[in-house]
Amino acid sequence: MSANAQSLDLYETSIPDLQEGLRSFKFTSVDLVKAYLSRIDEVNLKGPSLRAVLEVNPRALQDAEEADSERQSAGESSLGFLHGIPILVKDSIATARPDDLGRWPGSLALSNSIPPIEAHVVGLLRKAGAIILGKTSLSEWSNYRGEVPSGFCGRIGQCTCPYYPQAGPSGSSSGSGVATAIGLAAAALGVETDGSIVGPASRNNIVGLKPTVGLTSRAGVIPISIHQDSVGPMCRSVTDVAILLGTIAGKDPRDPYTLAQPAPVGYLSQLDKDALRGARLGVPRAFLLESFAHILPAFEAAIELMRDLGSEIVDPADLPDAAELMKRGTKLESLVMETDFKIGLEKYLSELRFFGDDTMAIRTLADIVKFNKKHADQELIPPYHEDQTRLIKCQERAENENYHSAVVEVRTLAGTKGIDATLDLHRLDAFILPTEFPLGFISDDATPSSAEPTIEFAPALPYGLCFIGRAWSEAQLLALAYAFEQATQTRLSRKAYPSAIPKTQLHDVV
Image (cartoon, rainbow, N blue to C red; front, side, top):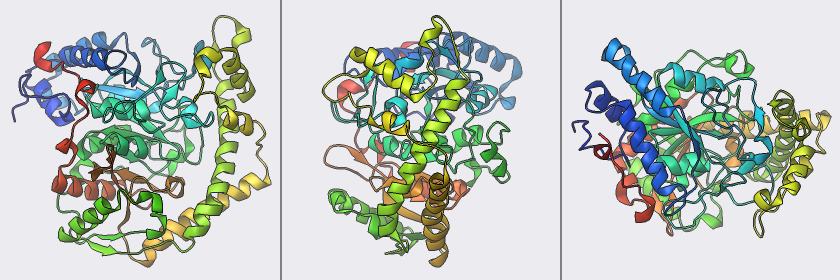
């Protein structure tokens, strides 16, 4: 299809199609930004009030003008896939002035703060010519405040899923999932600690990738766990994920974990519609709980499809200590995450600059709890958004022998004696599971995972398929995911509910 303003539907348009239109001067980056801003205006706080975008970049149109000027003078051959393409980023990812965008992890507590650096991944997007369109909403403090519904934050309220009115969007990268699903930008960045990319990608019928910890830098990202945090792409297609991942992956001295990554991989060039032929895929049945009964028929159908496409399915392919991992591993993971959160966040807070009344500076978890109580009308809204138990519990954590032992045991249970051992035992290329499985066991720093387009809408919301592999196996996982995507093409089998779909298209602004 020719990439002109009349033919493109921003609900689904891919990054390559947008770039083709820009390169052939069928429309401009200014046109794109205007169209996306109008789409955000239609559904974010008006109409269905999805509350996916916290704020838009006041410089977005100016940045688009600069991108258009560069295209006019440089010629198309020297510009990459993301040049002039509007991208949204999760609010926990720092952007630097002059954008004048917030970086508050959805919390009003940091509303008068300025981070010392811009996130490394944002710098890479800018270097590639991408336009930072704005910041997306999230589960406040990345779901680590307390038992609060996913998608709620004090800055904007409750984000909801566009596939069923008032349904939860999953989290914590809630806004990135929702915004991408209905075309409020070309793509978005999320951050995962424990399901925060894979979950919202599945619930909002898009593709998400949680990279191996260390493939993408966390410098400039508000931390939850140094052992588990990972910045990843959230897109409408595997192709777009490969493009975005190839842009944000790379070493960064400010994040020592990235220094261990292997040589760069051309993710886009390795996509293969026949990648499932000959692949050995394992099904860890022990993780398929009774609560998954409503999606198991669709999962079984997906397995049969992959068999038909030439995959060899090893079923079951259970981890040796699956029961122990789910029971003891969950407790150990909580200890590690709670301690990491206290150490990492308080270090991050100590580096912030605060303007205005210095007595409002937030330096500790206790300061956050106190602030929320003082501003309860916005932060602790009854009856579902009052809890702060995680923030309170984490104040008690300390870096000690129990913590260090837990770090080693989690890595052993989930990694060397779990995922890696089972993959080696059965000579597997990857595990496959529905995205609703307990995500904790793949949250270890050595495990990448990819959530794929919907395998079923059951009972009324999307559920996806997850490919899980060894550390640094993103290229292989994306190839498998691409083959599944091309064989099924399920994303458009059902769209968001009508009022959640913005009406503005490129031809309305060109």
